[in-house]
Length: 625
Image (cartoon, rainbow, N blue to C red; front, side, top):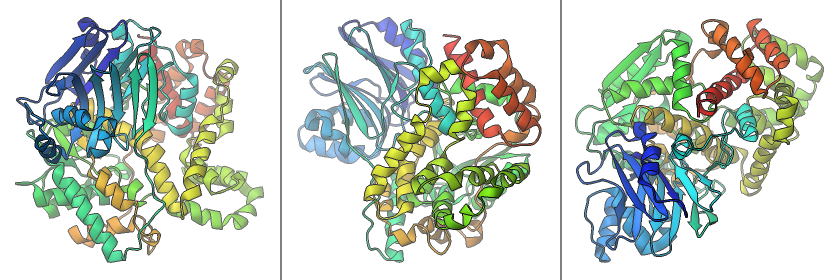
């Protein structure tokens, strides 16, 4: 695991520049660095040593030295690939997974990506063709951004911070991307909050050759062809795939453990780790003194049953310090507040282990979110909901007073949505087009242009996926794997864990697990009133049912209460002081009304939080660079 960076083009070839770029990524790889510098090319990396600690340095090359590789991630089938490559005459100098990439590319060219099982962001310099290949794993576990240069060259890095100050460039904000943050809480690929910076999409690669770029997608999720499996077959196939995915992720020369929330996904991963791990599995959980946000008791019960070496930390964090840590760790605005506890649990786990397995991906791959059940149900109930139009405003006020922002939004917006795709999109958005339009200043809105573009793009993708999907639940799962997972959840875990030099591995997003999950019969995705029915049955085989059948909790913080309490002054100052006013992005009258509404008891934190995140990001990463 590491951070990578590089440049290619007429002006590339400076050890000082690539050294400065990788220095900004030391948190991703504190153990050592490595460089390849030649006329027209710079490659660099920071390494977190996990596999082949002694000899696994990067960059790596093939036998000829013509193929040079730096990469961030882990290749879990590298032993099998190495054996095949050795049988074809390739000679290896290390036991690392990174060297396999160089030889596999030499053997198979760009199609080598389809052979890899793992998480990765890869850069390959081919000296013979004078070309640079950048690639990401299937679902986007590892990040990679790039920028074309005025001289026809290209610069890339694991994080945006490496692409500006080290190169003497002052960053500017892309307001259209910030509009996406205000819409969904994050900017999806290919968008970045920085002008001129492109986020490489999951399952794709870009090739630079002679100043020209070509982009290609090598993998996309497809949930449109379920198999006619029986319930038992679906459970057995899924369990076998997950068990194997967990087993191959236990390869590490450094201490390894697991995040354990006590939910179905992390419980399955931890239980299967216990099958294959020598000695008790180290598990980690943080709890909150605020009981409505604390699920540590569930994690403790699972840990006790499985006999793990459980580490639990009950916290009452200083919200100001936590928000400051978020702004420093995330160099792009990221408005999913579950990033805050993810930073805490990553810091806690890193005191004991270097690698942690997670339950990420279970809800998306196996249809676990409540919206998968609720949205089709509301669609069928639409004729009845139509009768509620005259009382929508009173319902919203009541729902807001009760603290249910989602109910309030449904009462106000859901009835106006023309179809299922529009309803799904509204459920995923932080606020309506009208709410966003009221916030942007006239100048900012003019620069952005189409304020509705984020929703329009979402709906267009929905139409493409739904056109070949036999079921709305399968469509929503595929949509979440394409957008929500790589744009939100995987960014959160990667940045929060790597901020503390911790590698996070996600067995439920394994290539083979996703293949099985995509084939689950539609009637078993949600069955007997249970979401992710197959995973629930697997969990019930591994732990007692009472540890499985409990309410689902999000990994969150008491954000709304913080905004009226310990963060109130900071929030008001940040959004209304002279710095924010002079920036001119948002209308101050709308901001003040929003804050006043929230202070009075109406839930407006869904809009306040992304505004705060955007402003703090601008101060940390735009103003100071």
